[in-house]
Image 1 (tube, rainbow, N blue to C red):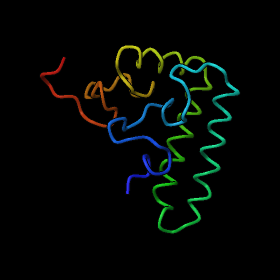
Image 2 (cartoon, one colour; image 1 turned 90 degrees about the vertical axis):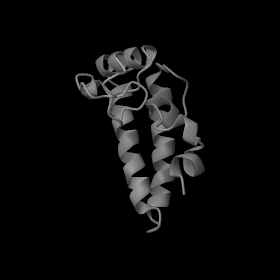
Image 3 (cartoon, helix red, strand yellow; image 1 turned 120 degrees about the vertical axis):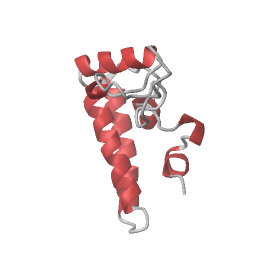
Length: 116
């Protein structure tokens, strides 16, 4: 089962999702009310799923990702860094910007040494 696709409508080719895609909002959305509303909607849905033992682990993990997205997108400085990283073709968290092994297309994958 692919929880990103089945629960959030995020197909495999868009995974891992950037924070905006994870929340189902427009890229570079700047309205804090829109961001907060999207977080609350996603969290409410995932909390319902987390009550089912079969889905608890995946739903808890994704809720953690949504919480991190909320922290970044609702903080002006962190959002500016994150948006810059996306504009450069990267989808990394601001906290990970000084990780020299970070892949530019997948924030969870190491960068190959020949791809600079």
